[in-house]
Image 1 (cartoon, rainbow, N blue to C red):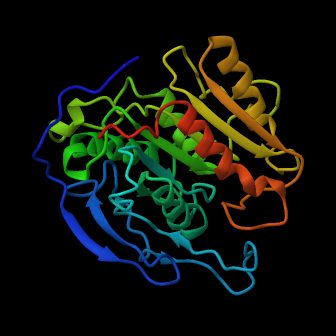
Image 2 (cartoon, helix red, strand yellow; image 1 turned 90 degrees about the vertical axis):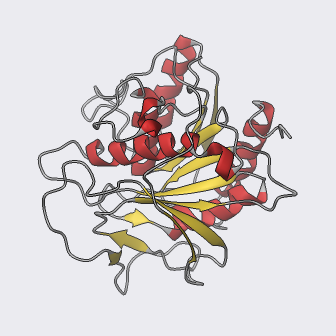
Image 3 (tube, rainbow, N blue to C red; image 1 turned 180 degrees about the vertical axis):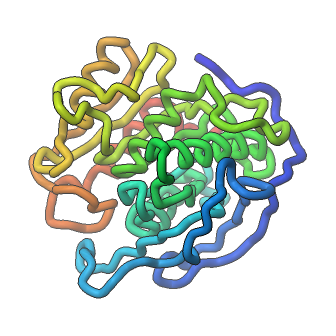
Length: 307
């Protein structure tokens, strides 16, 4: 298994402390800027970043959803668990939104609160959206995700996390992004900027929650051509509902490939639940996936405190 190299101490990333609105969370967080200047390849001007939700937009479990759009300055927001609960594990959280917006509370801040409740430091990735013209949908977000993972490892001592227990968790398009991060760690997708980028941006484990775009558009029985699992792929947790409009093949076909490669994985398929429910209290049994995910992380040894 590939491990990170020695930790580095000084980074160009700026750190700030803050708190977000009550609509999103009551917890405080640290903000870590990913790029010291403009993000790689950014030339086009976009409207101001903000919540793009409109009256009548779909909510979940009788609650609205914050839809952040026009992200040009990606960052990480670090939510730390109570010291008496902290296990040392950390998870990079990637919200979904079709690579057009970020479901920032439903698949972001609310997930960070759950992770904190089980002793995990949560790092919420605000990656670039919408899709950049002429590029693969995940190209710019993958740069952000790789940089984020490198920064987390480089800052592991400061953040009081174990650099060998840093995973990623993604929903829908965020699940696609986590898959790209998990399978393309051997090649850095941007020019190195500091010592953090000498590390290897490989998650130690990956959780895919109703992931998108993992199967071929014309043949749902095979992986998409840009999804390539290997024996170096880290352990994975996959869950989806059978009635998800994207097709539950998005977890079934990857699971078959992981099984072929003998990569440890856990697959949970629910008969109903649809798509885009986060971890809110819907009527479907699919809402119980966080319990199964926590059990899996515990069984795999990722939640064992190393104090």
